[in-house]
Length: 191
Image (cartoon, rainbow, N blue to C red; front, top):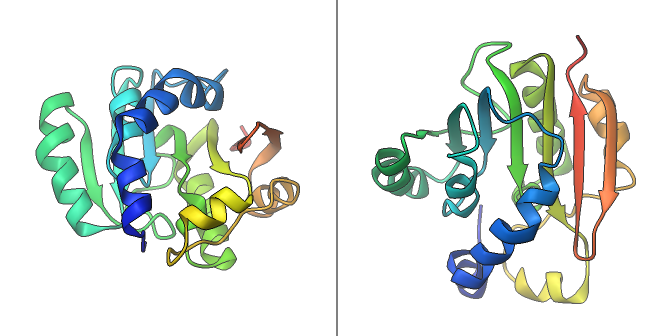
């Protein structure tokens, strides 16, 4: 989805990677079993994929942007053995029950509409094995967040309303937890 030049620079920066790897991703995935088959939706430039790869039993990453998907496939795919695919998180190209965990990090606000976000949630539920976890993080609305996203696709997710949306998608025990600038969420496919 559309990202302005400043936003692209931030998402490619060492400081972004350091923050994501040092605090954000450990917080987002705390208590999430990553040792099985994991699907990451929306890896973007691969900062989160690089962190996930050594922690996942087997990692597949699905990127909607064909250029980014090709770059990731040529880079991280070969370097770390990650299966990089091009596709849409709202129409996942995987059979039912394919993954033990589905994760997405700081990408939901780039999904163009709430309806497409809801389709992504339903698709995550569909491809999870019974008892599997859907988890991730996204940013909370602030002036700084708005400024970074000027000219971007930006559909903010309300953390208070997300549990109801995850339940409607067929997921159980949905929960969110607020952080300083972001929130984490998780839910499970019923066993």
